[in-house]
Image (cartoon, rainbow, N blue to C red):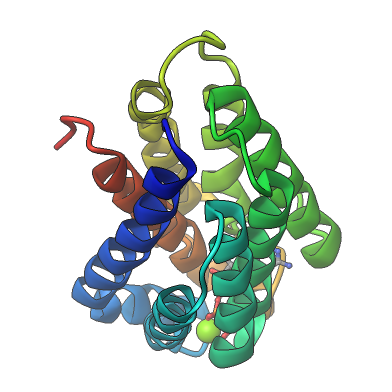
Length: 213
Ligand code: ADP
Ligand code: MG
């Protein structure tokens, strides 16, 4: 990302695309959550993203600031375990990015801070069948890209790790959150939160303008 204005535009475009894709998958996310949870995950994500889009439209300033505002609005509006955690992911990432620069190493560091915050708040470890299982492989793979690679290319290279991470949750038994109570019933279904995280990361790939499918 070149100028800070372009970065703010990308955050707004990302939120709009994220709302679009999560809305398109709302029923699927609800069904995944119904396997061992309460079925509200799709609706929760849509509600949070609507509020996030509105907050970013209203806010002005740097991309980091917009993201932090969007995260706070997401957490307020969506409720549920995922609301607090995804909200914290966005706000911590945004706060760490601050006023830039928004190059690949800075975005890696900001996402690492966001991931750490989610793990601290939710106390989930990799393999517990949560959104961590999509987020952590993505962040690790992004961090392994050459530092001078433009963000759009690095993101595109890391995105398959998020998809594979989300898909791999099908074979896991839930050990955190609401679905841990009926953990065995989650077997054979992907974790809804991990699936959402993949869609959010894919929407950013589109917002950054890479030629991925
Ligand atoms: P709720 O469980 O309150 O109904 P949602 O259905 O919106 O919330 O979200 C469920 C998702 O939240 C799960 O699929 C999982 O990915 C994520 N989640 C739940 N608890 C945790 C946790 N402790 N750490 C990380 N992610 C979690
Ligand atoms: Mg739920």
